Length: 174
Image 1 (cartoon, one colour):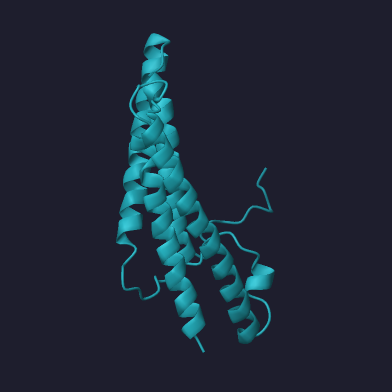
Image 2 (tube, rainbow, N blue to C red; image 1 turned 90 degrees about the vertical axis):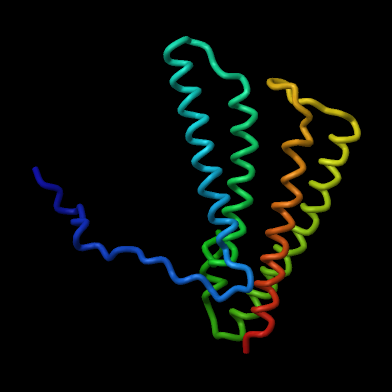
């Protein structure tokens, strides 16, 4: 029995992402970091699934590396999502009203996001420094945890700089 409510995929318009805004520093770094991180995460997870299936054992190290890679993936993809305006937002407020209201909302959202990620950069830096000073080691591999955490304030700082650029462009927009 054919489903009368199902739309034929040929009838649906293809999604074409908008072009990237003009930037001094292109989004290539974040895009490549996202792609490589996702690829590494998929390979590690696949290897763990195959080993677990064949031997009923698990690679203990895959979990802690996967957690780190998921955090890197989240931060790198967030940076490009902010710039491309593909992040989670309340469209009714962000796109509603006139241009002046949209600009005010863009400035307010940009300022709050900038303050959040600037604070997060500081806190993640302090966390990495504490892990270095205290000599914490990871439970599965036994490597210093600051090897993982030292990259988090760097990525958070990248987001902070991207947000500063977004805020500057929103401020200069007439």
